[in-house]
Length: 431
Ligand SMILES: Cc1ncc(COP(=O)(O)O)c(C=O)c1O
Image (tube, rainbow, N blue to C red; front, side, top):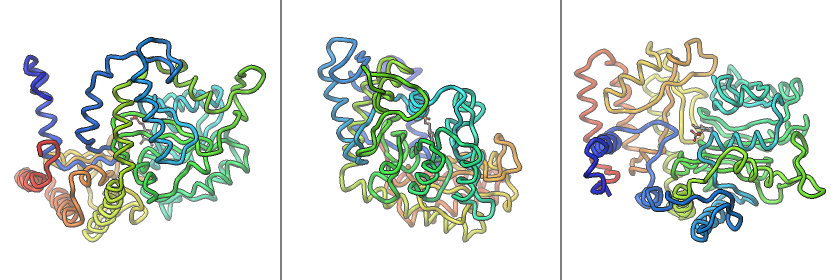
């Protein structure tokens, strides 16, 4: 496909550099993955030309008969994956899916309760630098300091004390399973709505390897580009039999009855917060959802989890503290305190060794978010390349060698060569 960029050498060069970076580095950023060529083709297709404000069958523009078909296929496949009664596949991103939910259900100033950002939560779960912390009255629940895991007594006590309108489960940097039934119990006790943002583990939940929040929540959101391995984007879902009138907040009527939550979500996503949907991306979501429905995706998701367990164990064998002592999903949070290196420096020197990670706060971190005491590592992308347990052992040894020799550029350069050699056996888009 690159031949069409021959006339724009400046951009062609940048694209080649990025392609080469993805091919030759070890991608361990937990929120990233590599989509299939089919997903790339749909994302780069002529559907980018089409304006389609509205929903299938109810558009503001003509000529939508075929993009309607694409959106309907995406919706039907997504419903099938998670057992959803209602889905909206139009949010341009995970943040916009969450914004659509909050603005549909809540009034400005309403209280929300989500996992604190510095304990693994996401910006859109109530951080003061994000719209969610600015428009809403956000309270964060912490992890248990000893176990470094969710503590349902702490969450329940906070919910009883704060009486939030909405409780949010889900995280960006939490490696353990979630008990959605327990969250439901807490939400019911205080009369709150319950939302799960399963952006990180959704590809693993899709194949039944982790608990599915849909049967317990009023609404579930996810990005489509992490373990779900689709194009960048977001979706909103309601589980089977769970759609109902919004019990609180915004009183919006349809005729003489209150609108259901699904009706509120649809009208908040468009025209509430977005204009024309990205039809090429919606078609790419449909392609990715079909891949998720295939049996081979079960093998993939299983391998992602096996790889994460092996990588965590190998790092622990080398004296690294892993938050909560392990992982149930695709990611782990490494506490670097014992290794006398900050997350910021680890990210930089591992980059020199050809290994891409991100610095990350650890629970009760004493360092700033720009420095941090930890790093987050995920196995979704390297597993897509075909790497298995043996490669995880090599990766742990590369990381350890780089951190031990963090001030010796010649060692970092030699690790970089070993990383390239390993990656050459697992080609991505060049095969
Ligand atoms: C839990 C969670 N929710 C939402 C998002 C936001 O997604 P996006 O970057 O597509 O806005 C992320 C992204 O990392 C996330 O981890």
